[in-house]
Structures are given as C-alpha cells and as structure tokens.
Image (cartoon, rainbow over all chains, first blue to last red; front, side, top):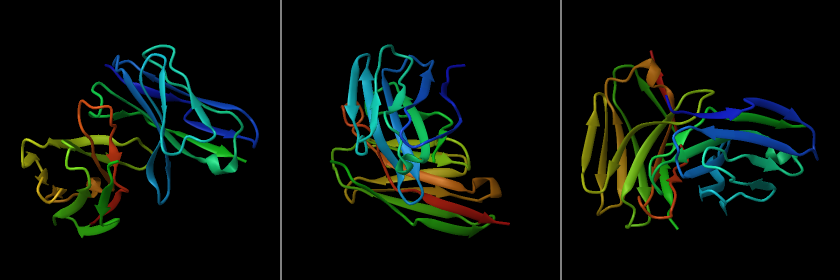
Length: 112
Length: 113
C-alpha cells in the first residue's frame, strides 16, 4: 500500500547542530508539505513543494530549509537547531494542489 | 489569504451524546473543506470532507454541513464513543489552485464514559 513515512520518529539534539528530518511518500504526489505542531498553535506550515526543484516558504520558515530532488522525498533541515524549534513535525502530501493532504506519523524533536 | 476559525477549543460530552464543532472561513472562493482527526501520538487523519457543490455529507456517525452564504461549516458526531476522543481540525482551500489548506486551531473532544 502507498504510504508516507517519516524518520526518525524521535530525535534529541543540541543547540547549534544541524538536523535533517526525512519524509518519504510512495503515492507519487507532486505536492508535499512540512508542518510543526505546538500546544496552543495547531498546525503551522513551514515549507511546501509543488514538484521537483520547487520549494516555497510557509508562515514559520525562518531557521528551516527544504530541497526537492525527486518526487518521493522532501527532507527538512534545521541549519542550526534552537530550543524554540523543539516541536512535533509532520510531513504531508497531496495529489491535487489545494486538495486532501495525507499526513505522516510525525517526528518529535527535542533541542537541548 | 484565507483565515479559518474553529470553535470550541475543548468539548466534553457524555458517551452516546452528540458533538458539534464549528468552523468559519474568510475567503468566499474556498471550495474544499476537509476534517481531520488526530489521536494522541499520531498524525492527523482525514475523516470526512465536503466540496462547495453540496450542503451536507454523511458517513455513518459523522456528518459535515456547509453554509456557503454564511461561510461556515460544521462537523457533527452522533452517538459518541470513547474512541472518538481526539483532536479534530477543520481546514479550507481552493482545490485546484496553488493555495494550500488553511487549518483551524483544533478542538480537543473528550467523550466521558
């Protein structure tokens, strides 16, 4: 069955380190998204991509970057992790622009 | 851009009662309205959606209604069960456009046994 996976599921890192969170989908969806979820803030969009080599900033993109070299993967990189980036991160994908998004299981990141 | 407001933020009901969660949106062009359920420790999962060409959609114990004139849509859960306890998110978008989903802030539903 087609699916969307995230790795690692849990990560503890130190302030200042570079961290990359992986997202892989097997639906062949063109559209992929990264969100962070914090108590009291719901889902906030970090970055999104509408296809290979396309990336766009969301509402909370500072300190994060993405690259899209193929259809299946959209890794999220924290260039220099900060304690404010402690959160749960969700990746999602959709077939249609503006359409139903399917979410991965999430990565819990702790920055000490 | 689109703005989606969701109420209430928390809702407790007795098992067997009904639960209603309401969302309003700002952009009259929006035409796609999904609802997601997020259980503890998991990603949001689509439970039902509605498009602007219909006013109501039902799937067993859950239903969604849409009022385009008032720009609001609601999730109705009947005969609630403990496994319905979760966070529910509404969202809105213009399907087929470059505008992605805008999510509401979520409702924590607790079904009391």
